[in-house]
Length: 308
Ligand SMILES: [Zn+2]
Image (cartoon, rainbow, N blue to C red; front, side, top):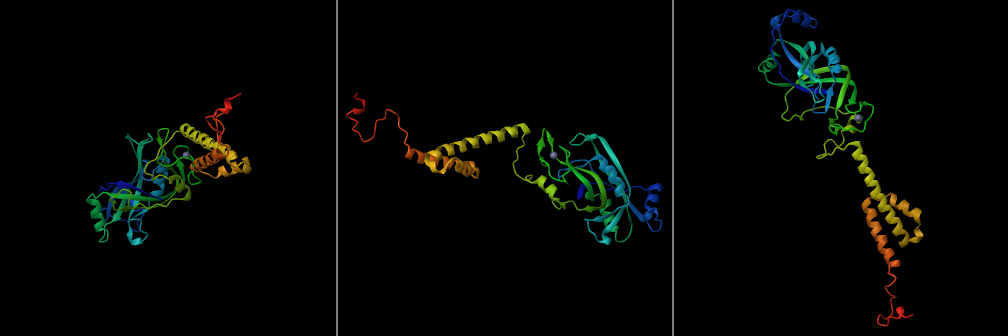
C-alpha cells in the first residue's frame, strides 16, 4: 500500500555525526559540501483520507524499516529517479495534539540526503524554496484491523464499514505490524486531495468499503437495527397471512402449501397487489352480505321475508 502525507521539507545544518550516518551508504566518504539534507515526515497516526491509520507500534517498526531506503519521484521505478536516501529515522510525539481516537499525535520523521550534482540541482532548489510536497510511502502490513471490533480485514470483512459511526466512534482501518518498507517518494501536491492516489484494495478491504460513497448513509445502533428488521418481518408476515387467507377463498383448489410457496418469492409490494386481487376475486365468489340485506330477486315492496 501507499500512504501519502503532506510534509514541509527544509534545509539542515549537518552535524558530524549525521555525516557519518550518510557515509554508511556511500561508496566514498562525502564531504559536507557534497550533500544536501532535509527532514521529512513519512507517516503518522492520524486517520487518513482512506479512513486508515497506523498504530504507534507500526510507526516504530517503520522507523527501522525505512532507514536506508531510497526516495524516488512519483513512485517511479526508474533508477535515475532515485534521488535521495534516508539516513536517520525517529518517531516524534506531540502530546498537545490529539488524534480522532484520543492518542497523542505521533509521526515518523526521517532525514534524507541527496548528492549535490547537476542533475539534482533543480530538485534541491524546489525543496529549498519550501514548496510543500507530499511524501508518499509504500509499505506492506500484516494486518488491517477494524477499529471497532479488531478483526483483520485482510482475512475477511466484518459487519462494520469504514467511515460509519458505531456508538459515537468512526470505523476505520488500523494498519498494524508492518512487514516491509519499499520506498518513499515526493509527489506533486494534487489539486484535489483525493486525486492521484494510487492504492490497490484486496477483496476483503473492498467489501468493507462498499457503500462508503453513497450520498446519504444512516448509522443505527444494533438495537435500533434489530427493532427495524423485526418490524419489517411483522409487516411482511401480515401481508403473507392476508394473501393466504384471501387466496384460499378465491382459489380454494390451490391449497395453503402452494400459496405459502408462492408468497416466498414475492416482494412486499407484489404481496400487497396479489392480496388485493385475491380479495377482489373472493368477493365475487362469496359476496359478503349482511343477514338482513334481503335475498336478491325478490320484490322489496312485498316484505315477504318479514311475514311470519
Ligand atoms: Zn468490525
